[in-house]
Length: 123
Image 1 (cartoon, rainbow, N blue to C red):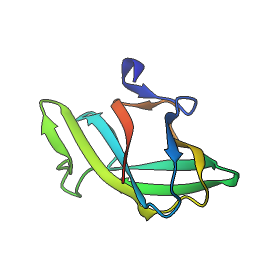
Image 2 (image 1 turned 180 degrees about the vertical axis):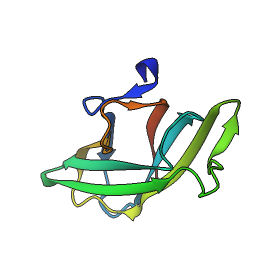
Image 3 (image 1 turned 90 degrees about the vertical axis):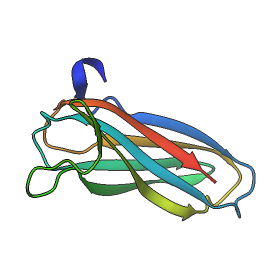
Image 4 (image 1 turned 120 degrees about the vertical axis):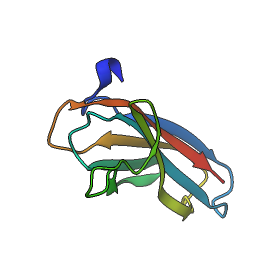
Protein backbone atom coordinates (compact mmCIF):
# COMPACT_ATOMS: atom_id res chain seq x y z
CA UNK A 1 0.00 0.00 0.00
CA UNK A 2 1.36 3.39 -0.90
CA UNK A 3 2.52 5.18 2.26
CA UNK A 4 0.83 2.47 4.40
CA UNK A 5 -2.64 3.78 3.48
CA UNK A 6 -5.46 1.55 2.21
CA UNK A 7 -8.20 3.60 0.51
CA UNK A 8 -11.65 2.45 -0.54
CA UNK A 9 -10.64 2.81 -4.17
CA UNK A 10 -7.73 0.37 -3.84
CA UNK A 11 -9.43 -3.02 -4.09
CA UNK A 12 -7.35 -6.19 -3.95
CA UNK A 13 -8.24 -8.25 -7.03
CA UNK A 14 -7.80 -11.81 -8.25
CA UNK A 15 -9.25 -13.62 -11.26
CA UNK A 16 -9.95 -17.33 -11.13
CA UNK A 17 -10.79 -19.52 -14.11
CA UNK A 18 -13.19 -22.26 -13.02
CA UNK A 19 -13.05 -25.29 -15.31
CA UNK A 20 -15.04 -27.62 -13.04
CA UNK A 21 -17.90 -26.19 -10.93
CA UNK A 22 -17.80 -29.30 -8.72
CA UNK A 23 -14.27 -28.39 -7.56
CA UNK A 24 -14.37 -26.54 -4.20
CA UNK A 25 -12.10 -23.56 -3.56
CA UNK A 26 -10.93 -21.76 -0.44
CA UNK A 27 -10.23 -18.04 -0.29
CA UNK A 28 -7.94 -16.53 2.35
CA UNK A 29 -7.42 -12.90 3.31
CA UNK A 30 -3.86 -11.82 4.01
CA UNK A 31 -3.04 -8.58 5.80
CA UNK A 32 0.06 -6.90 7.15
CA UNK A 33 -0.34 -3.95 9.53
CA UNK A 34 2.09 -1.94 11.62
CA UNK A 35 2.08 -1.80 15.40
CA UNK A 36 0.70 1.75 15.07
CA UNK A 37 -2.60 0.54 13.57
CA UNK A 38 -5.21 2.17 15.80
CA UNK A 39 -7.89 -0.53 15.86
CA UNK A 40 -8.05 -4.09 17.21
CA UNK A 41 -10.06 -5.34 14.22
CA UNK A 42 -10.73 -4.79 10.54
CA UNK A 43 -13.88 -5.04 8.44
CA UNK A 44 -13.53 -6.02 4.78
CA UNK A 45 -15.90 -6.74 1.90
CA UNK A 46 -15.47 -9.65 -0.49
CA UNK A 47 -17.11 -9.18 -3.90
CA UNK A 48 -17.49 -12.16 -6.26
CA UNK A 49 -18.67 -11.59 -9.83
CA UNK A 50 -18.49 -13.28 -13.22
CA UNK A 51 -19.40 -16.67 -14.61
CA UNK A 52 -22.89 -15.43 -15.45
CA UNK A 53 -23.84 -15.00 -11.78
CA UNK A 54 -25.16 -11.91 -10.01
CA UNK A 55 -22.48 -10.08 -8.03
CA UNK A 56 -22.27 -11.29 -4.43
CA UNK A 57 -20.87 -9.25 -1.54
CA UNK A 58 -20.04 -10.55 1.92
CA UNK A 59 -18.76 -8.57 4.90
CA UNK A 60 -16.17 -10.00 7.27
CA UNK A 61 -14.66 -8.84 10.55
CA UNK A 62 -11.23 -10.03 11.63
CA UNK A 63 -9.68 -9.60 15.04
CA UNK A 64 -6.15 -8.21 14.81
CA UNK A 65 -5.38 -7.66 18.51
CA UNK A 66 -6.36 -9.12 21.86
CA UNK A 67 -7.99 -6.99 24.56
CA UNK A 68 -4.57 -6.61 26.22
CA UNK A 69 -3.15 -5.11 23.00
CA UNK A 70 -1.20 -8.17 21.82
CA UNK A 71 -1.36 -8.53 18.05
CA UNK A 72 -2.85 -11.84 16.89
CA UNK A 73 -0.70 -12.15 13.77
CA UNK A 74 2.91 -13.20 13.48
CA UNK A 75 5.31 -10.33 13.93
CA UNK A 76 8.59 -9.14 12.52
CA UNK A 77 9.77 -5.84 13.90
CA UNK A 78 6.82 -3.44 13.78
CA UNK A 79 4.88 -5.44 11.12
CA UNK A 80 2.25 -8.05 11.95
CA UNK A 81 0.79 -10.52 9.44
CA UNK A 82 -2.44 -12.52 9.45
CA UNK A 83 -3.76 -15.13 7.03
CA UNK A 84 -7.39 -15.97 7.72
CA UNK A 85 -10.09 -17.89 5.83
CA UNK A 86 -12.85 -15.97 4.10
CA UNK A 87 -14.69 -18.82 2.42
CA UNK A 88 -13.78 -22.50 2.41
CA UNK A 89 -15.14 -25.31 0.28
CA UNK A 90 -16.84 -22.80 -2.02
CA UNK A 91 -18.17 -24.12 -5.33
CA UNK A 92 -18.59 -21.58 -8.10
CA UNK A 93 -21.94 -22.10 -9.84
CA UNK A 94 -20.68 -22.25 -13.45
CA UNK A 95 -17.59 -22.65 -15.56
CA UNK A 96 -15.86 -19.41 -16.44
CA UNK A 97 -13.80 -16.56 -15.10
CA UNK A 98 -14.65 -14.96 -11.78
CA UNK A 99 -13.37 -11.73 -10.28
CA UNK A 100 -12.75 -11.65 -6.54
CA UNK A 101 -12.24 -8.24 -4.95
CA UNK A 102 -11.49 -7.31 -1.35
CA UNK A 103 -11.97 -3.78 -0.09
CA UNK A 104 -11.49 -2.33 3.35
CA UNK A 105 -14.78 -1.42 5.05
CA UNK A 106 -13.70 0.70 7.99
CA UNK A 107 -14.79 4.30 8.70
CA UNK A 108 -11.35 5.70 7.91
CA UNK A 109 -10.53 6.42 4.29
CA UNK A 110 -7.73 5.84 3.78
CA UNK A 111 -7.10 3.31 6.52
CA UNK A 112 -3.68 4.10 7.97
CA UNK A 113 -0.86 1.72 8.96
CA UNK A 114 -1.72 -1.06 6.49
CA UNK A 115 1.39 -2.29 4.70
CA UNK A 116 -0.05 -5.05 2.48
CA UNK A 117 -3.31 -6.85 1.74
CA UNK A 118 -3.88 -9.84 -0.49
CA UNK A 119 -5.98 -12.77 -1.59
CA UNK A 120 -4.86 -16.40 -1.58
CA UNK A 121 -6.97 -18.96 -3.48
CA UNK A 122 -6.50 -22.71 -3.21
CA UNK A 123 -8.29 -25.83 -4.42
